[in-house]
Image (cartoon, rainbow, N blue to C red):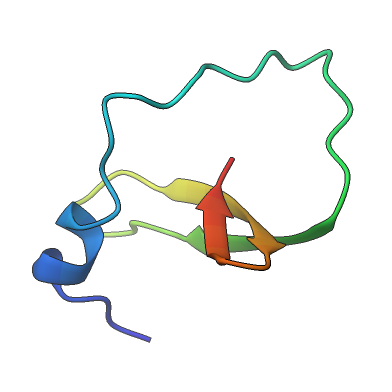
Length: 57
């Protein structure tokens, strides 16, 4: 699935708090992987489904 840049930039917030690796996250967690084989680096994204939508963790 291709995500347009406009959708990605709407998800950016400088008010987000850093989540420590030791923290145990609860909820409906979903992970996605994009293997950047030719040009871009690989990336893993994890989101938590909440009532108001999805939260990038």
